[in-house]
Amino acid sequence: MSGELRITHAHGDRVTVTEPVTGVQLFAYVYRPEAAWEAPRPYLHPIRTLAGDVVTDYRPNDHRWHKGLSLTASHLSGANLWGGNSYIHQRGYLAIPERVGSMRHLGFDELSAADGRLVIAERLTWHPYDGTLWAEERRRIEVHDIDPDSGSWALTWTSAITNRRDEPLLFGSPTTAGREQAGYTGLFWRGPRAFRDGRIIGPEGEGPELMGSQSSWLALSGEHDGADGHATVLFEHAPENDHSGAGGTHPAHWFVRNDPFAGIAPSWAFYDELELAPGDTLRRRYRVVIANGAWERADIAKYLEAHPW
Image (cartoon, rainbow, N blue to C red; front, side):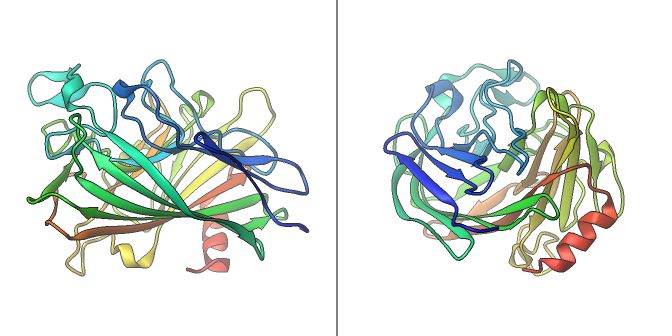
């Protein structure tokens, strides 16, 4: 593949990334503020395969606040930066606008493309409903390993979130608040409607029973509407995430569904709250691979062996 990835920046709105040979727009990184009830935050949508097929959804009628691929917090010290209704134990999901917070784009430190790699480096702030500063984030999204032979490309998402309050930030989820098997928070991908009932694959098992499990990677493949064929979306923890918690860090568990929608999140706080002390920084890095076709477990293992961290 020849030529560098192309960056187009519509200031105040979005950054789009285009593969130069095929002309496929791989994704748009949208950072303009949107509806307050949906917890304004930057997100990637649409994300496309190298064949040009879309593998994300945007404002679906079941969850208007689901937007492509984004990083946020469903429960954060009593605030909801995820968007929509807030889960309250024994009362269910309630519309509580004063709980819904936001993230604000401050600026880009880098927008560059060279040597087959593209970088988006951004500064953001996190806020509850009243707008006070709770956290600062430095985010880095890198596009790499564009491979026409395997029909795949990858992005690495790195976030460093620093607590700017005078008290701990408590990251939680609906499960830490009392709802079983709903531990969603952190980096979240919402798949297209056609990917409902898609195949969920892990290193040692598959299917919806992988909800709440632990492993270094997880994938979901689905069949497109409007185009023949399938696509696979693969998430992988970076080694330093220590997702098992064996090294004393907070463990991560997979939130994954293929009914009533397709979605994946390597949750920071599935079963237990994560406490971030004042001034401390939460760092996480993930790889997301977008591939043509319905990859089998052996295909995924072969790819990961050929593309070590």
